[in-house]
Length: 410
Image (cartoon, rainbow, N blue to C red; front, side, top):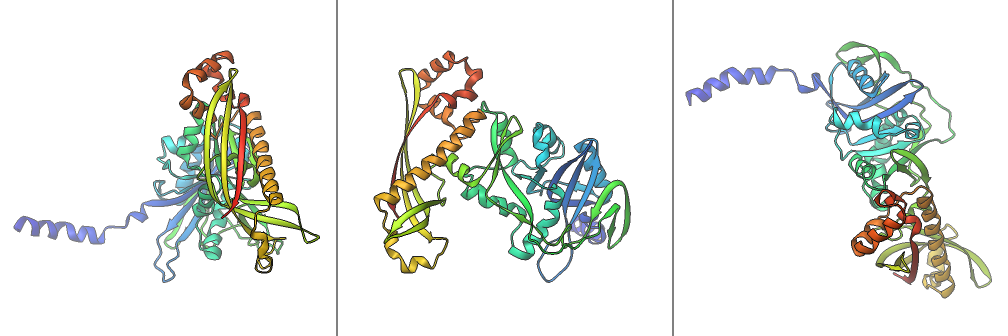
């Protein structure tokens, strides 16, 4: 007991009056990387602990420039006046121009040395990655959503695949050397712009001012950039091959890629030219359920992929209006004409997506793995005829797909 009391006497005052960890270390919740001519700019979305009654996080975007990512992070750290901690970073944003080269070499330092978590969401943007971080505060104010939640919806409902940094590396080092990452845009809503000043080379804080020679900081908790610009999620994605962008996929192409994935539902299928009582309608259906039965075989030495898809669909819009459903309830019936049009639209999506994957030698749907699992001996024998395992990424080019689609109301 005496020893315990002595410990309390000596260490309690030190613990109570010692400065908080936030004085020495900045908590980074998102990181953005841009390429500006011959140098990199790394921007850090930093959490600022502030007492308030709104339960909102106060954030600041701090950036640094350098000839390498390591130099840029070091200069951003100088501008911040604190050591940086990336263990809480949930989103990594890169500018689209970085995908013209092997982006793995750009993010390698972050994951290997700077301890960036591999489960961080990996995103590409057509605009400045720094601007995406600056606009992310508006997401919280306007929608109550954080940046990782915006692209996380796509990962759960559209891509149906993990879009983390770890998933990127798994695809990068796989035999197909391919992966899919999210894509966000920044668009102008047409209102007048309001310029937000940026403090370059120094960071103003409530405690004073700390100088940073090559860094820059924007400490406005309301975000930066133009007030009329917003982050827009259009459901797009980037197909990467060997760390480089090979295709920008739209929502229809993503639906085609995910057609054979039984977990991929909620896609909207739009069909035109539906005739009813002498009128022509545009119908939108949502896939609520999906059952997939797949099998593979080799016929005359060539691979055949066969799949039967049973789709449960529901009508969601008529001519772009929800209210029309209350009046035209008879449209809930799946007529042979509607079934044929839905089947045709789905096969068109799959054919277009398959062409992209074949042109890019990117088997992100795992066709090669399926054949290797089901028909290993025939698969190895076929690979020998086209050049061996080194040509495994091209296997999808030789596969014939036979799809049988059954559409029924759900």
